[in-house]
Length: 276
Image (cartoon, rainbow, N blue to C red):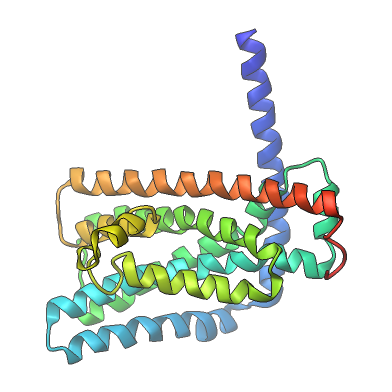
């Protein structure tokens, strides 16, 4: 019985991975249609680097090198989250394209499909943050030892994929509020920028705000990144990275549950008509 259960679990996992792969291929084709190397480099990347530079210059105007470095690191990681959060609109796009009703009727879990359809967002976000931390940050005096660059790259990926769950969760909510999709993602970005340690330390806030911040993967991811940049011990980095992954998995589970709930409600009410 144990062997049969193991085989069933493996087959189920392989099936889900195959669905994710097909959805990711479709997403990749759509992304290539939206961006080429020029529009991505001089459009999106240029905009994000300008944002990091803006906050870095605020730190410089404050006359504090420490504050400038804090803002550079925080905002260099934040741009990764901002690109990842564009997935909030994924389900709404499916609805406007008239494919959401088909996904609702399909036997595959809709959460699996939407997970694959948005994979370009965390991957692109990780690349944007990598450019910000590895190329832009040194111009403001933030230097990371070469031996720590692979660790930093892994932490950036962990940041992107841990916050991906938040984007998918909010995306499920946005399906029922299609006109508010950009408001939802923008408000979430601003909230994380305010309380997750991007602009000011988390300890700046009251205890209840710190408790809310502890539920955000970005809070722990930033702590890990700052620990690496500061040359702190492996134990400190590992603890923050583990909390990043744990909170990220919790948000992915919440996103899966929310998507399943939205799907069931849509099937029951028949509300996922074309661009409805």
